[in-house]
Length: 424
Image 1 (cartoon, rainbow, N blue to C red):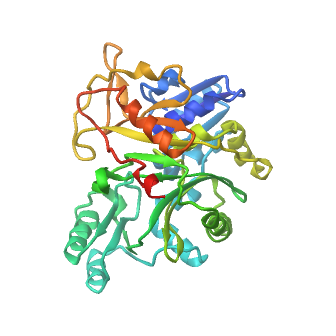
Image 2: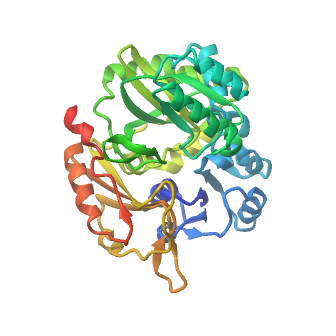
């Protein structure tokens, strides 16, 4: 089987690494890929939003199965394009990817089908939003309705901050068209947990839990980023929490999408807040999380292609999803200044230290080859250094030790990834 993975970050590197382990796969392509992905797949210089080129490449090269890693192409309808061309593809169609593409849609869906979430209001007029906020209880959360690379969420502690947030999202359009409308949401307190799942339109199979760290700086300070590190499993995701979520959140979400004529096939990412009143849905994503995929997929025992094919064929109920009884921690090595401004093109040294090790992984997020064939930085998040261990404490210790193996001149990381483990 020939497989095409669409995307070029740490998530897609983790996907490609899992695909490579499948005995069913003889060739992996990745578009556009990156320097690290090129070690496990043939990278193709086609952008993730160039649908026609991706379909043409797949036809010309006999691609049997496509895997869409990124949110933008999913929301844009890439799965529909591949299906129209007769190419098997893993991911939700455009009418189902709206689960992530519009926060207003997902909030309305949860309200309609009684799926527990925070109270909210939706606004397309900034003046109306400001009028509402003058009567609101703080802190409060502002969310750009559309895709914003995981950064379109503002937690406002006062009316002044909220007014500045409305200006940023809806008037200055910092997040582009994602801010044409905005969700104003009740601020929830508790532990955040991420849960990934495979879905075939009717059946849902839950992967191992994880917890992400979004803020740029230690102590959850600084700006929101695409993720500075993560660990799996979450010690706060108990058996009781799992039972509640399966009954009131996971299956109800799948059933709700089917009832709306939008059957969901692919990965649903559930962002949960474990409040005093029980779990609440913070957000849905329509694909693997990044960096969550970098700690969840290395722990999965199943052949990922077999699971994905079961989703596409509507027979996921026949699959027994299994994970190793271990733990994983990922520390993101970023460029200093991320997520605002940072230098690129800086040489990376020490990557060979990961060769031949089956309990350490270095997933490339923002790398490329320079004109001399050397690997250099090419983004804000550069590498995801992941280690597995018998438990979270061991995995965390190993992951931080491994961050010393790699160097580039503006290397930056948080030093408290997984610190919550000590509080569990």
